[in-house]
View 1 (cartoon, rainbow, N blue to C red):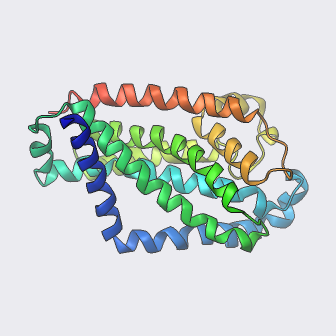
View 2: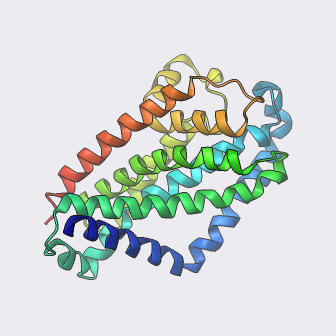
Length: 252
């Protein structure tokens, strides 16, 4: 019970801290809107013919995935902040395992990322997508699967970093390839063959495809079956949680 209580406490702390950061809540609404309106409008005429549907509809699930990705990996910064202010020492001497500490922070970061990603659904009507409650509820498990692995990546990177500056550099280096190679902005069929192979090992590719299958049901032909996307995400999450737990367990 102490392990579960520790996980819950760390989860609750991360969620409360996120709720108190008003600037991040505001940016949750502004950044996706800029991508959908400015980028989506600018590329609309050029790309609609290649996607087969309106381009803004096509990138909508990709923007949801982008929000999840960027927010999830950024959550790793909490490890560095806790270390800087000495709170990490208090966590590590608590009578719970380091695996529980990692899982608690991972679940908290995932919850924050899903909340932030959910804000993007508010703009669905702007691009002509009429989402029902059932579609949103079906999307939530996929969003959680995306964030579990991505938050684990962020926490793992932060566990190896000594400063905020180092984390920022590595975060950008990881974020951008994962995003641009996932098919969030362009159909994978238009990638060169060698780049297609690289996209195949990008876990976000399967998250984008799964969200696009659910959100654009009947309007978009999925690249892979939904069950296959989910299976890949589950394997990715399990791997990253295991790796992250082992690395975090060696944190001094």
